[in-house]
Image (tube, rainbow, N blue to C red; front, side, top):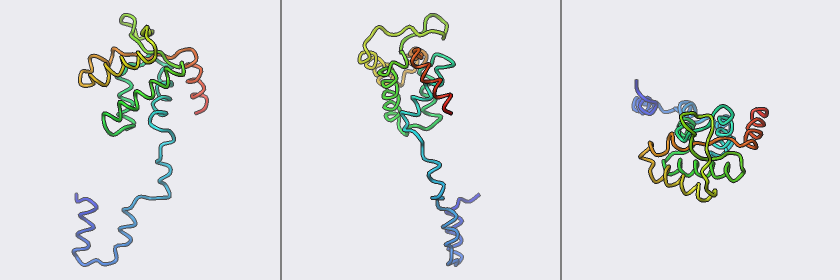
Length: 161
């Protein structure tokens, strides 16, 4: 099946001169453009999604990256890393989530890294960004869990929807 440009070119080649209607029909609909604008920045969207997902489970980095890809929050891998690092940093700074390892084979409880937030972010950057091509080092080895304050904020997000 020919694409729109081929159809348009073919119509022009056959001598059609008044194709304004075609051009109008194939241009973006400006009156609906605002409905397609994101309501939140990529960082805010990811932050809220992690809070909501944290109500149901501890969140592995594999899930974080799947949200980024599924929602198309960033175009390049470098942009994905930036969004992830900023969102997680804000959650840690605000005391809404903790970052660490899973205790045993259960995904019910995260054992927080015994590090300052700066040191935890350095560790996250080393494992997730610097070794991104080695997902076994981070996908199911770095976990996030809501704090009690984070659970309250997440519940308020559910109530606000």
